[in-house]
Image 1: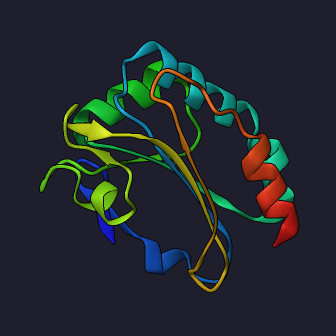
Image 2: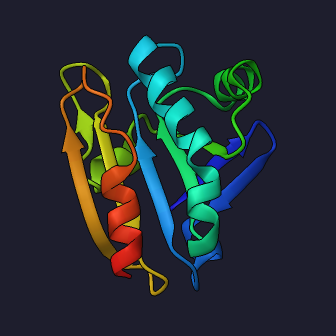
Length: 140
């Protein structure tokens, strides 16, 4: 997939081939649980560094919304806009909630060859934390 990372730059998953990728699908930038979840991942970046994993957040919010949220929360990883067509990438990963019109809270670890090595679908109101991701990266 290719999605906007900023209002004028796009990122393709294929560009990251050769190292692990962590996809964090989440419902909305400014929701309390999402803010907490992304803050936990932000704090865990030093734990991800030895694995060389690239962390990416994905929601149906626009690149402009992501930019403001990322700056406000001082996040140090890209947030990708699955904005138009709305939720297309979330749907591909089975992480779209059509009733709510947003991504579900889902985590994916993709190995260096581009295969899904681990995934977890969390209840919308629950911050799943990073432990499952860290364990999956250790197993790669």
